[in-house]
Amino acid sequence: MRRIKHLIEFLLVVAVAFGAAYGFFCWYKSSVIPLRYQEFVSKYSEEYKVPESVIYAVIKCESNFRADAVSTAGAKGLMQIMPETFSWLSTSSGVDYDLELISDPQANIHMGVYYLSWLRSRFGSWELVWAAYNAGHNRVRQWTEDPTLYANGKLVRIPIDETAKYVERVSNFRALYMKFYSGLE
Image (cartoon, rainbow, N blue to C red; front, side, top):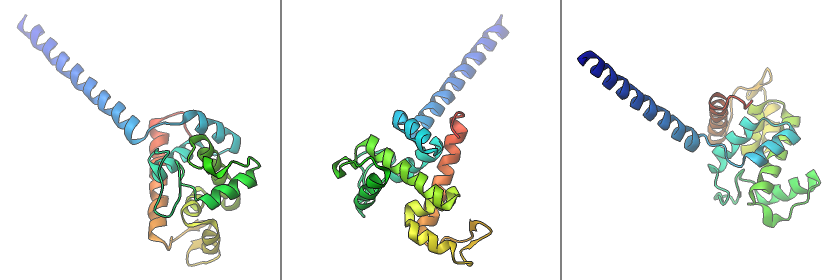
């Protein structure tokens, strides 16, 4: 009888430990790698053929999902788009958003995903896309013409430390999104 009591106590402790671990995992997943703004992310992912994991990783790195984020350089919104870039993207996409909507989650995600798609059509690899998103597409185009920076279809060195760290962060967050959310590519 005593053994059964100890076994039941042990099983209860194990169940509580698993419950706590699962609770921690759920908290970690929802706070560290959240899926917010799913409706907009899914819509524009499908429209522009940009994987949701890429969009979530960029938003995570750019604003940590804060729609009201403003950088010291003046970039705004979830995907941290500069006002001039937002206006250009808006006109280029044919949507023609008013600049006042730059921090609106739907408009910001729409233009950010459109820009990722535009960059992907020019550079091909996500590494180059993320570098261009951070450092500017003209600068990255110049890097691809420099054999000391670009060889065999890859950047061998990113000359701006901030951009190198950014590319690594986005890549790491994308991997986490793909690992924890099996439906994301």
